[in-house]
Length: 122
Image 1 (cartoon, one colour):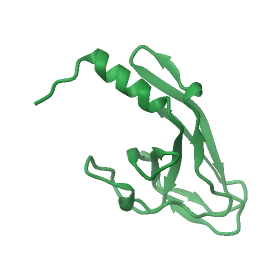
Image 2 (cartoon, helix red, strand yellow; image 1 turned 60 degrees about the vertical axis):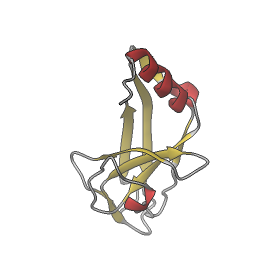
Image 3 (cartoon, helix red, strand yellow; image 1 turned 90 degrees about the vertical axis):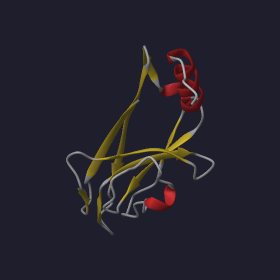
Image 4 (cartoon, one colour; image 1 turned 180 degrees about the vertical axis):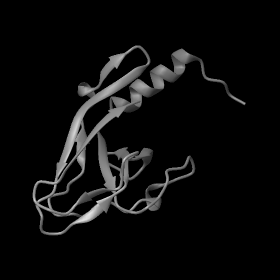
């Protein structure tokens, strides 16, 4: 079994986060798991939704952790749904990197101005 050093793990994480990533919301009632693929998640379709493209330069590093500025999603009120969490893919592919279910969810995105703010920390 391969054992990564802390240094190697940091280098790998910085390499992945340096790429263009997509933050996507999901609307099915699923709990993320290690064997998941994007097929496990139903991407949100509420009016006003579009995935957020994350730029590698915007991550703020503090030791071994990185935080991304809050990303807000705002409903336009024409078609609503419940949102259970988010998942991250590379922007140019559907390769799933990680997912998180909202602790206080699901969040209703039904009326004009309903908002979800997502702050990423890894």
